[in-house]
Length: 552
Image (tube, rainbow, N blue to C red; front, side, top):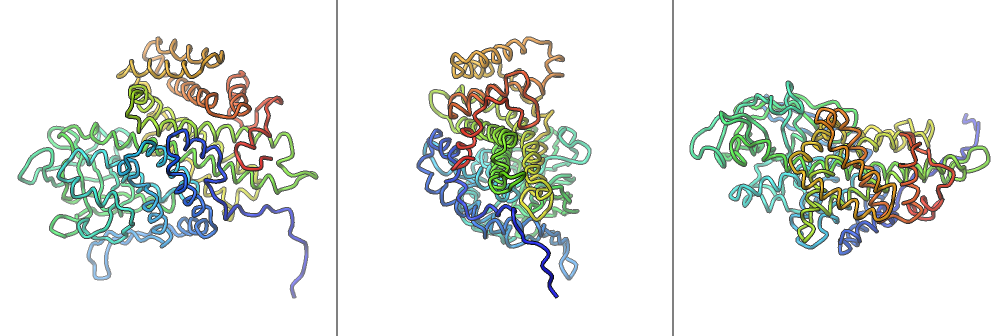
């Protein structure tokens, strides 16, 4: 017998079959400001695809069925193959079709970086793991361009809009992905302690020469990429090498995958530990200058970290808003209750500020005009600052959004558990918080003129806003501290720098109610790390109307 014990009611309907781009007026505004209006139609198409129920289900499948490692064939041959659920390859095909591997390098129009950042922002809201190999492939392009002969062979494969999942030599494929291998067991972030050795095998020595690599990598991202940029040591010091999965003679390069990492999040993507047993590689860049050679790759991926975390914030926010509009408690929807409105509005302000600064950075990466020096200052100093702050705030915001759902947010059947597990990865990838803050100080020390340009730009854009002018003056004064004191307070300084940058952009670009609520809350002396600590004067309805069509 089937007993009827209750009627199901007061459960919020799933957010699905919506257009991520057309329901985001703030992103649309940022795209226009970034000169990428020509890409708006493509973004609308991408937004519809990613918000469809079919693609949302694909994202769930890719994370429910993580990659599997097969080290040997049935007959005992070493194959080192990682098998993925078909949905993973569908997402890689989406990244290719929408230019997420090469758009700003292949497209010469103004605003290409803004178009790319907006596209990444959309993709990472639905399935972030699949963006990892796309991000690394994108970031390797400026490095590989330094090697004319090698790049001539690879450029068509890097720029291709077609995903090719086959495990074949690059010459036999329609497109390739390129990963990176930097960290080792004993060093982690301290790559200068790497022990992997590269031995010259004849012919040209140094740049463009062929080498044999012996050693290991503790984190080898996306091992099924067709090649990796790897740091290894020669007599001249650490150098950078292009190491493909297949040797030029068609044999498998001896890169043995020891195991896949069992990660907290980012589960659709494979991260691995590998050993090099005489792996063939080509030196990229000057011998002994491996870290400076590969650092541009890291700079690009740090921008990606910021955009990705801003995307996590956006998705957490819209999920919370969707739930709050439908769920009732004590006779009213959650969205009608003043304290919940304050929480949601504060989350919306944080999300918008993260988007604004990420899109500003994307513009800086593509700036080639009269403001190039100022753009370079943003790129050098604000990139690690944003990577530090936005990635950390994404973790907090995801937790707060989960709490909006109550117990429903804590179960794996809903969207919040995966989003919450995904959020911390960007704080760790490409350098932890301390590394980012120290990189901010190093950038300031190496390029003091850039820092002055940055502060001048912030001050100019702050106009007559007293709170901002005071904060920017304090940032200047703090640079006069003794180096050890400045380093000890590096996190505090980086946070203040980021808040000033976000506040300037909110004042300049956001709706008046949102700009004032952001400045008042962040600079009123009472704002804490808990969302919802806005005072009663904030126009929460106006803020939320900007964040999501129809408002609350």
